[in-house]
Length: 68
Image (cartoon, rainbow, N blue to C red):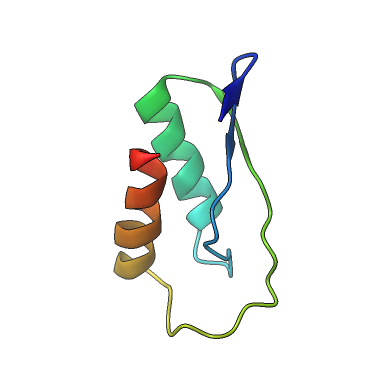
């Protein structure tokens, strides 16, 4: 959502050190052309869903952020 020139990203992708927060911020900045992006924290007490690093996280969650 974008309000007063600030975009907020709500995504279920859990940041576990792979850099998804930075990736999501960059996708939103480029797609929407806004400078200020807040990536809301998610509950890290999630069941394991396999490795979420590199390509899969970028492809699935990054694509969802871009389409939203």
